[in-house]
Length: 224
Ligand SMILES: [Zn+2]
Ligand SMILES: [Zn+2]
Image (cartoon, rainbow, N blue to C red):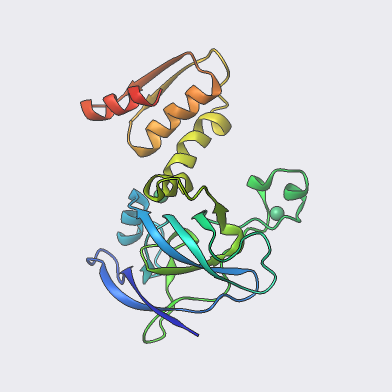
């Protein structure tokens, strides 16, 4: 059965986005269908709309989402129908050299869902960051789902899939912040404050937040 759901689509470069009916297939092998509860709005969605990421219009926007698994395809064992999940950009293979070494972040063979979601006329959609969650339902590779606590606020945990991971990862992985170091974060938007939280988690003792907006500085203080 193909599901007809409403979704936010950027049909062409710089045109206003529109709410369209899209067709979402039942999950095939290794795929999962997710009913979206919440989805954040990220600057990357604007980049897609402006053509700054590619020219594969129409784009199905949205990628910072929390949802409930409503169907799984053949061979999916790590998640079940009813699980509360957040979505990540790509699934890792679990078998390549990097995955075997316990470093899935360097996986050589990441993937998204194989089947395509389409507009009603059959035009294939390009899901933003392989997710496309400004929709009532989306189709992803099962490995893109990460189970979360059902008691967590869906609007908050969905952000872990993009801005929070980008900022905390920048501090802990890219910046390799060590205990006792001092760190300056320039720009305290969603990613910046997550970098501050990451620096704090890593044990930085002095964290300098730089921004021209007093409200953002206030938020930065709360996070580290
Ligand atoms: Zn994002
Ligand atoms: Zn791999």
